[in-house]
Length: 442
Ligand code: GDP
Ligand code: IMO
Ligand code: MG
Image (cartoon, rainbow, N blue to C red):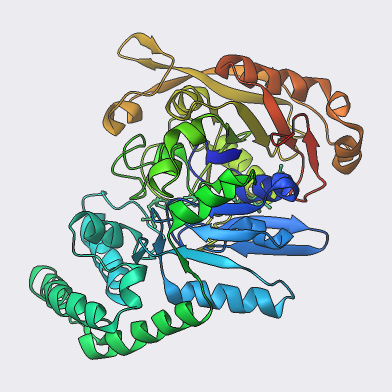
């Protein structure tokens, strides 16, 4: 069977931890979208792993697949694999031959376009990894795929077509002088060698066949979403979004496993008990209105370690946005929820949520479709009594009933609003710091 893990908010909900949590019963973990913009953390014992491309099942020694829906920077992939090997892991990662390749000029163009947009506040605050420009080339039918790296003639032909266009874009449209990132001969040499290493290590696959065979053999496959529903290119707060579909439907298109197979499995929504955001754009429940709110945001940021896994940027902090979650539940069809970080909110006198929005005298229970209308929304807050600090490892060992009562009230409110059962509650970053109510592969 399959289980799909999806971020319900703005990314960084703790997806990596949940993949690791349920990973013991999994045979293969597959990413279906995104690239090295992701930063997924797994904490096990005294070890912390921050993974950008290698699927999080690697910490438990599970096979990882980067599906055709991913964009893959071979340089960061090999660096990550090498550094995990130095730490004693032995990641077995397969890469779809249909996945698109991030080239150095994509990263340069990502930066150039963000700069150009910043005057009109249209920049998304990207991770600078070249994600958007690579997906543009895929949709524009001028991208280079992993399979092309294995065939030097095809690689050269593709580079000869695309690189002069990219150089002209940088130089003639944006007026930026280009360097070796736009040099066909050096790109050819470097990427041909990446192709050789991929072939030597037997890493390339037809993802649909590879995963389909595993599923037919009754193995368990987990799909590891990156980013989150509200930064989905279709369903998110456009244009402050990423350039792929983190939502559950993409698990099918991004791997080649049919939607009927994925639909008979589980789709688990990962929820952070408050909001965090790296990047720009509006955020109606943001804690930034006055000094008291800013102090509270600082406190949560420090306690929750809310600094970007990839870029180190401080994350913006807000109360839980429940209309955002209702939208996510509908788009993804969650069968279960993992709600993380309730330990971070401990010790506050009260905890609020944005239960609904007020917009032009109307009350809305879900997100408006345009980001401009969303920016005009005033959250209708609902206040919950706070819960005190406890020994969370003990709570995790004892189970759900040991969670402070006020925190349980909060969790059950979320579950009721989304009409979805809670499968797990995160009470700390470690694998053992989770209260498990349901195990989806049982
Ligand atoms: P991802 O991108 O969704 O995998 O999430 P990130 O790894 O970017 O960010 C989540 C951060 O919170 C990581 O540092 C995790 O180790 C940590 N974390 C995950 N779950 C919990 C939790 O329940 N409580 C606390 N305090 N930290 C958590
Ligand atoms: P994980 O998988 C949080 C955000 C960026 C920016 C926007 C576009 O760790 O949850 P991009 O580089 O993708 O073109 O940037 O999306 N963003 C993320 N925010 N978590 C992530 O991944 C993110 N990946 C991209 O900050 O606003
Ligand atoms: Mg992250």
